[in-house]
Image (cartoon, rainbow, N blue to C red; front, side, top):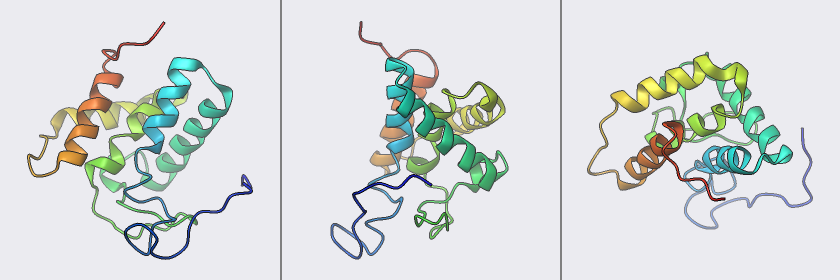
Length: 142
């Protein structure tokens, strides 16, 4: 376990009692870590993205439909429905791990089969941006 000097907030600070957990304000982290690792090759980002990938693979059995929509920091899912905003970003982190191809393939199949919900701008926008990255169409800066 990595120990950081800064601790997450507790209680309702921004939106809900889960503000310090892996919720809607944190669901994009696997995308951000993965993209940084892919573009910069940063060892810390790569390690974090791979660790995230390994954890989600282990708790879901490589089934993206089993990704919850919120986790406490001890790994307990507090929302079981699989919101696109939570499972889609995992595809970018999966790109950093050569051993995660089956997981990446499963995530891509779900991305490709999922229609963006016009009423869910957040999840739909994340889905589109993740698909641009995973498909190799993201313009990398030189």
